[in-house]
Amino acid sequence: YEPDTKGPHPYQSLRWSEQELQVFGAEVDMRVKAGDSITLYSDCVIPLGSLIVWLRNCSHEHQPSLFIDSSKIFKEKFPRFSFVLNSSSNSYDLHITNVSVSDEGMYYCAKREKKISKDVNSIINDQFEFKYGNKTTRLSVLGEKTFSLLFMLICFVLTNPFLLVSLYF
Image (cartoon, rainbow, N blue to C red; front, side, top):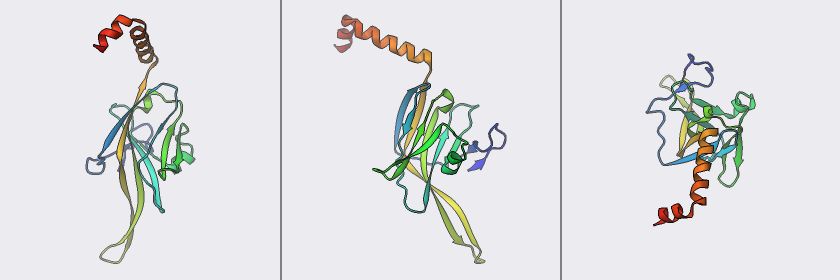
């Protein structure tokens, strides 16, 4: 990854090349009302010596990507985000409170492992390696108008039995 220092929040902005970010598998679509809380579930099992990170890529031009690790959460750089230990899957889920449209995007979890190697001159090098899970979560936030229109449509269909029967057959 390469930090993007041009954005308003340089510690949040990252650019990912196609080769660096290859996530395969299921895509989960989650929709939540603005102001609600949501938990995104991780499929990354965390072995000893590894850390979990969460990443968000956005389709919006003016919205930065996020790279969230535990150190940034503990330093309160992301006060609405928290990691929740999922003991049944030995992973850390991502909990977001007071969700807003600025939280929309594709979320990925990854294991961050430190790899130590020697080069040809016996100089020890260390670098981080990321291993992504098989699941991505697309988070969409329903605004007040969208939620109200959807609610009115459902109420209309449920209170009009002839429309409901015609939809069934």
